[in-house]
Image 1 (tube, rainbow, N blue to C red):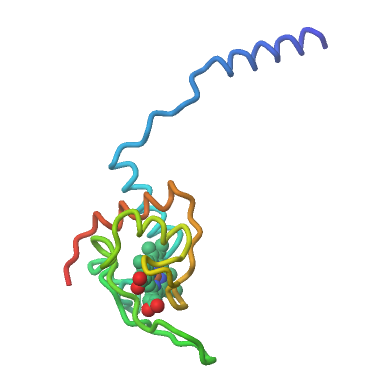
Image 2 (image 1 turned 30 degrees about the horizontal axis):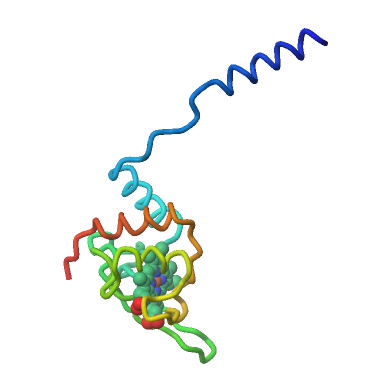
Length: 139
Ligand code: HEC
């Protein structure tokens, strides 16, 4: 038992001695993570990209779209999801990153539903913003 424990302690020491800090991600890696978050998880394309019977038309990714659904009760409602490709109009990079972390627009108001109020952490917000800024605005 003693031998097992000292062997285990040695392993822990060896593991702790390894360098743990990964190198900072490159700009390409940040954009790739943003693409994964946007297309694989948070679904910005479900509203901000024109819809087809087979899902969002990714040849027009994040170019803005009218929503194909409406609330069943009256409420403040944004029926059009504005274009985002290249970055949303009227936002600095830092304002866009803050919006993804708080839901607060540059003028201090909140976007209307169904726009979710995202609470991303800073790394995710920066990655999502970097990916969206990298998309060409085609419309
Ligand atoms: C469920 C639909 C939906 C999803 C999903 C969605 N949005 Fe929106 N978004 C909207 C609508 C609708 C508006 C317009 C709201 C308004 O007019 O007040 C909007 C507005 C915005 C705005 C503009 C706010 C402004 O100042 O006018 C930004 C920026 C934005 N969305 C970014 C995103 C991003 C980035 C994602 C994914 C991480 C996303 N949205 C996901 C529906 C959506």
